[in-house]
Length: 345
Image 1 (spheres, rainbow, N blue to C red):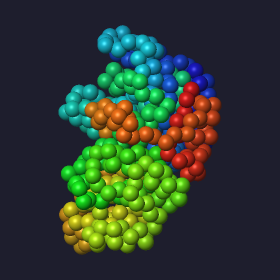
Image 2 (image 1 turned 180 degrees about the vertical axis):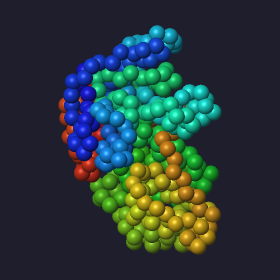
Image 3 (image 1 turned 90 degrees about the vertical axis):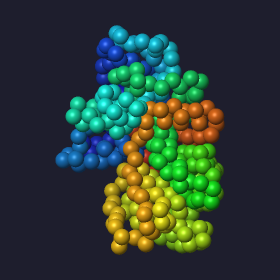
Image 4 (image 1 turned 30 degrees about the horizontal axis):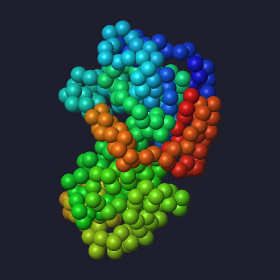
């Protein structure tokens, strides 16, 4: 089969021919219908040798949708031909977190060497993908896999991040989304769907600010130091109740901390690097909370897909055939994508 692989450190991924995988006992093989391109992929491909731990060659793609193609021995209640989305953060299935559907926080994954597809295990940028357990599949039903595959991360991750702040996003509150990319533009829609909060979008790209407005942001400002004063004016000097940072560079971390109000949340979702001072003397906003959520639970993926069925969220997508998948990653690297890129074998 054809697959997109990261084959040597520092090099661009390439489309190659590899052996088609066979499902073992308890496993399910999907014929891939769509796979999402994510900044996390670009992040791991930018790592130096002393920090890279994902194995080579690595078939990319942790956002996956497909049709059940072959079933391993012992698998029950799944039939060939069913359309499925893949729940990506695989865990052991035995610990407390996994038993409650929160495999994204599996306490044993490191010990057992369990890795998500495309982030250590063979991923979905291929014609076929073997899923290790039926519990990592969520029925897609009639949802278009190409338009919705990105919800397995670009929808699930902001959904999980926002749910942790719902108590603070009441009527009269204000939330800021920093970075209107693949995750950020979905976050705006989730905020508008789940809460009555006023949504403010920040980005350095005018086209992305236009996208923010088109998906429901009531206000959009350039992501620069002057945005703090504009947002303070908007909130009568109080600051915002929650900041969802999908960039997390030093500049955006500082920006978020400067605009969050007392008892507000600063939620760090992006994979950028930076540091924040904490403590009584570090900020003028008392009792603020800083969180770094990771992906989301399996039950939350069901909820995200229901929002899509209701028409509450839509992913802005640019589609590439598998042969042009390297081009999609090049555009991602150069910040030339609006929304999410999707690869279709």
